[in-house]
Image (tube, rainbow, N blue to C red; front, top):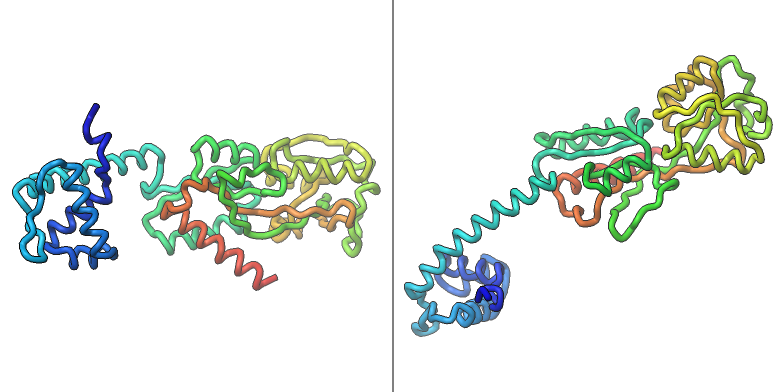
Length: 310
């Protein structure tokens, strides 16, 4: 068996050893590493025991490096450089820390939330390249779990989130509205009772999207199955069909600013009202990644701004 695997030679001890060889005494080594002199002495002593040959001699209160120590230093420097290259290649394979962040988002968040976060990120880390992928809640979660994406912006209200492995940073709550063609008769001063729209045609997002689950639940409460003309894979297509008079739909409030002049909007009545909680989600074991730290910091600032303006 390789002797190194059975001995207590650690990178921490080697770091203390290399710093001591550079600084020349225990006090300066302890100061440089922000540890106690006792810790430095203990690390050097146990390293010498594990190497199984003399590395230092005492001269008064000082430790004087022997030729064997200088030989060990040479190899320690090689090992450290090799390990640094190995860690760099490991991160590169995992797509971490390479000046590129792969972010997934719901289509509806590209109107305001995502541009705001991107602009903030570019100020924090100008050299960071952001790759943007759009999809459904379900698809984005799967891509995050598979390591295809580094972080996602989704509605966690409709998702099964494993809080043991995933970090969740809430951004804002969003209400759901009934959206209808301009030709429809809606009383915007009242809230929409879905039972009154039993005979209307509807357009829906496909299964797996954030608003789909809410759509199903709302009509379950209303007590009928809506007549769905078509299901689409993005919210912009859905609202384009509503604009064209194809049918009604349920729409998150974050789309209101863009569509309030081209479709009629009515907030849902209390029994059907629901909120989506929009959040940034990323792997907990990546929480120290500098790019994700920057994204989280920008997300917190964005959430704080929204709360102040509420």
